[in-house]
Image 1 (cartoon, one colour):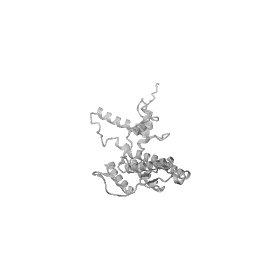
Image 2 (spheres, helix red, strand yellow):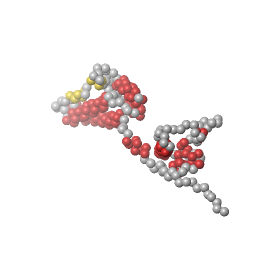
Image 3 (cartoon, helix red, strand yellow):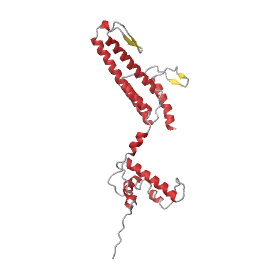
Image 4 (tube, helix red, strand yellow):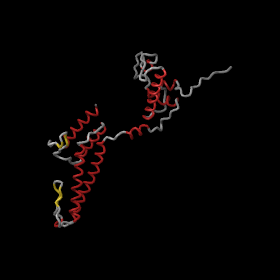
Length: 251
């Protein structure tokens, strides 16, 4: 007598896969996103077959009890959709384990502009520190009578009889200080576009201060009518900028 053996159809998830039975490992985010796309497309195309709008979703059918049991259990007591991810993907022949979809999405996003300003400020700070050390070194090796020039208020007083190395060191120090402050002021005119950007500038500004460094004092920023006469601390303007940015991000 011939025996009939039930074989799983190619591309059809097994009962075990659908139930979310024991899985060897948890799916990665890449696999979960692939599974979500498949589910979305499956729903959309099925509605098209039924002649319904693609966004139509029936409610109260016999399948409702799968996710929302009518007994004492809730949706939290039944196997989660993620438990079925790997089984379904395997059944439909999709291998998302080496997918780079998330990386491509991240690369395609416009970076928050404040992140670049943070990096620029870090580089400018390194150069300013180097210029400061170099000026100190020149002060030690150049005779006093050949280092009469000074740097004050973002201006270099050049004395013709000074050692050229002393003059160059002062110019370098002054230019690095101006660049560092210019970037810090520009940070106040650039609104973060993401929560990650808001968090990054807050952490960076706090850490910079904790390490003993100073942000520009008595800061003026550009307003709707040009340069503001409102002299406040750099931190005040930062908080004001972040508050405005958060309103746009939440919107």
